[in-house]
Length: 117
Image (tube, rainbow, N blue to C red; front, side, top):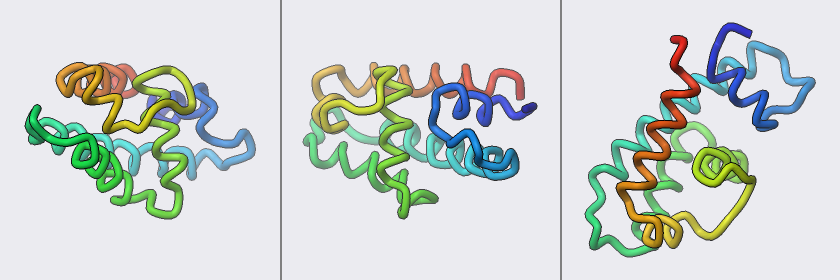
């Protein structure tokens, strides 16, 4: 598997073992687009934003390609931030951990996933 993000998704258990390689790669590229949008949009959100406003940013980024798979999208985000499949609402978590920390964590995890590209 030459696509680093596809390998990242597979190792993290975020794609079924029987999913064809082309589907994993396609999902990886779509995920990359959504993550870039998420990081950009979070960077534009002010520290005075409410939990709900921040939650909406996560939701809107996922809707870009994963509207029918939003549960999967949020699992990916939780894996990247907390290294587990679920957690508190992301708006609440972001307010607690700080916007800067969440953005940094998403950027570093994304860079790790794509560092061989």
